[in-house]
Length: 114
Ligand code: AMP
Image (tube, rainbow, N blue to C red; front, side, top):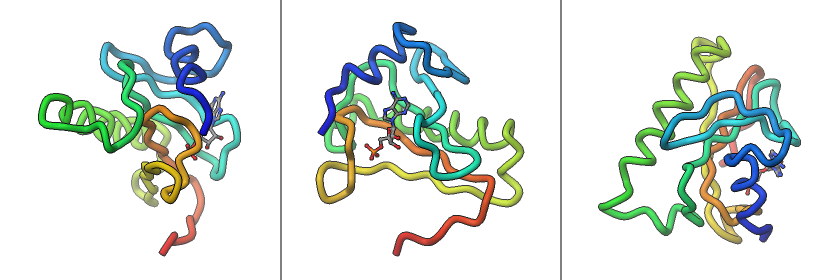
């Protein structure tokens, strides 16, 4: 699993990655290897390694990640046709980067994963 600093550098604008949205809680940027015409990652600005670290204290971050993903889907005009939001967790879930991130995918018909 890749180290969390990759996404931390994007949040801190140390790398030229394409940030499309940022506020005090989350940052959204384009996936470097897009699987769909729209493929955006939404991450919390504070380090959370995976969904397993979500608890009563920090659970509002997840709600904010969802609300920003939905806002971006509307801005990108993919909401009417539909989209997919995915959060992979650890090895069996296919999580490659050790930093909680939400995938927003759309702009084409996406295959069902199950
Ligand atoms: P996951 O498999 O859920 O951990 O997804 C990790 C995602 O991060 C993949 O879709 C990668 O293409 C993406 N990714 C890896 N490195 C970067 C980067 N530097 N900038 C943007 N996206 C990245």
